[in-house]
Image (cartoon, rainbow, N blue to C red; front, side, top):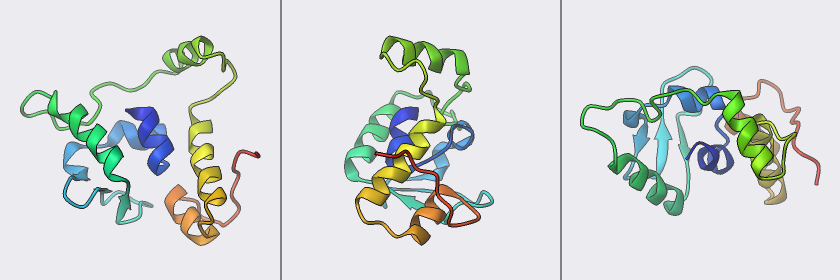
Length: 127
């Protein structure tokens, strides 16, 4: 789910770790939050919302955080090694999101806001 959220809406690992279920607007297909530097809401597709809904349905009543534990670097490294991508960093998924936006003609200004960059200098993965 973490990987999906990063690739689909560009969230960083730290942003994902702090997400609460109440940040998700299941009717509008977006994540809404009042955290500093966020866009007021981040829209995403109905397919992503469906997967997120399935994920949340398995939670215990009263659980507030979307992820109860932080995602350790060692675990990510093991996943990358198994996939044959030993040098891949979790943040590279954030950069991949940037590249996908550029390939689909999204303006630099919109990409800048989605990635929470203070300047329009974007460091996407070169394709």
